[in-house]
Length: 170
Image (tube, rainbow, N blue to C red; front, side, top):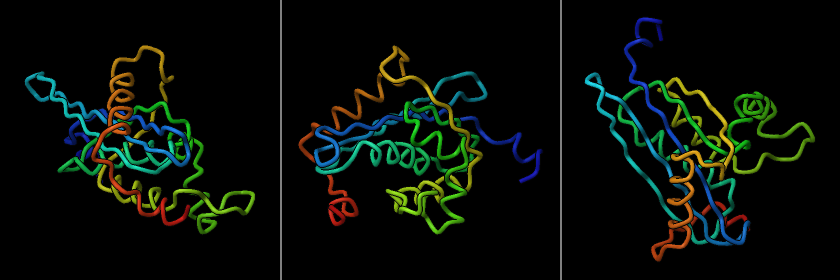
C-alpha cells in the first residue's frame, strides 16, 4: 500500500474486552465498540457482543478484536484499544512473528494456545493497518468499561454459542 493510499483510509478505533466466568471452563463473552468520525465530524458507533457456553478469557479477548475487524467492510486504519496484554504484547513484542516462524511454538517449545484464533485475527487484519494499544482495565476508561459490560452481559446471556475448538480440546 502506498502512502497516498494509506492517507485515504478511514480511521477507526476498535475498543474490545473479553470475559469468562469460572475461567477456563465457564461461560464467556466479548464486547466490542467500533468508532469512526466521518468527514462532517459526526461520530458513528457500533457495538458488538456474543457469549459462549464454555471458553476462556483469552479466547474472548481475541474474539472481541476479531469480531470488530471482521465487521469492517473496507480497508481502514484501525487503532485497537484493549486491556488485554495477551493481545497487545503478541504484536508489540513481536511474539506473533516468532510463533509463526517456529510453527506456532513458544520459546519453551510448547504449543501456542488459541492458534485457531490467532490465525483468524491475522486474516481479519490483513486488509487493514492495525495498531494495538493497551489500556488499564477497570480504571474508568468509558469505552473499556462499556466493553466489559457488553462482554459480561453476553457471558451471562441465554443464547450462548459453542466455542467448538475450545470444547473439542477440553
